[in-house]
Length: 211
Ligand code: GRF
Image (cartoon, rainbow, N blue to C red):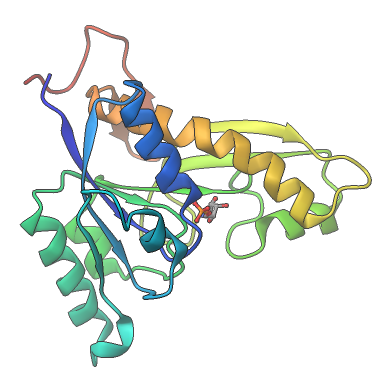
């Protein structure tokens, strides 16, 4: 099967991007990163790739008058690298309906809670304040809402009584690094079918597309 081309959008640390690179290198993910785009010139994710041959670029929001112009520039960069699936990996900006519709069903995000609980910022802190015993992470396709799109995979982790937001974030992050490459692999194998709000995971042999 041909390798699917991924485009990663990331604003910060880049540990999920690294986990995806590692999964590709280890042969757990049959994909290729076509381009990594950041909106933040100081993002650690860019430093991580400084010595690699992955094309990296920074497209800053402040250089465009309108949000849609900035998003069009991102979309053009993704197209220029023949990206088939867009991976949001700690991308700290909300994408408009224009971008969502342009790439409908082809943009994934990972969120550090069991959605629909605790969407938006500081999900781990929200979980601790609420007092839940279990939290986790969710990989989903994006839609026009905030962390509301169809859910692909979720995994739970315990929340301990003495957890701080940082400790819980670290526990969840370990799981994110396994779950995100796994969800991307399912997409690359043609095994994810979106039916309304639900994502059906097809068995091997039932794949949506063949190369
Ligand atoms: C992760 O916690 C992810 O769930 C959230 O943003 C964080 C990104 O971390 N969307 P990193 O930049 O991948 O290390």
